[in-house]
Length: 117
Image (cartoon, rainbow, N blue to C red; front, side, top):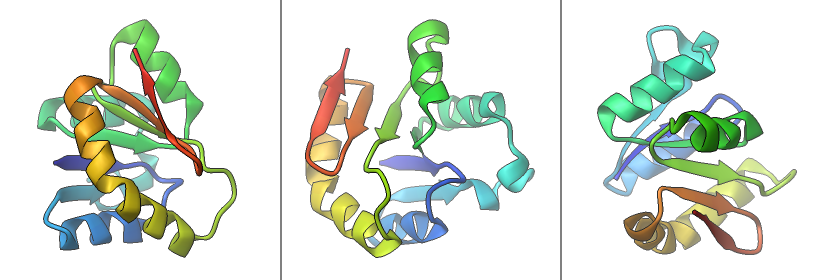
């Protein structure tokens, strides 16, 4: 899968996903870096066929109102360490891949995956 990781999430997440065989880019690695606008990120994710991964609720609103990004993983885990986040993400990765077959908007909490329709 292809992933675009937003600025509030650690760059290590993109690195780990790449190590696991995925195509993952962090906003820091984009031409405008972490100064990329929400609109920029939606456009990049949509053009590349990437899932936009963000903690930002604005992207959920944009998904429903503007139909962009086309695929969104909204991360609502609260305050956890980066190591805990990476472990959770890696544990849930097979379930995430399966969920994106059936839905384009998934919420990942520390307890469960929530499918948005």
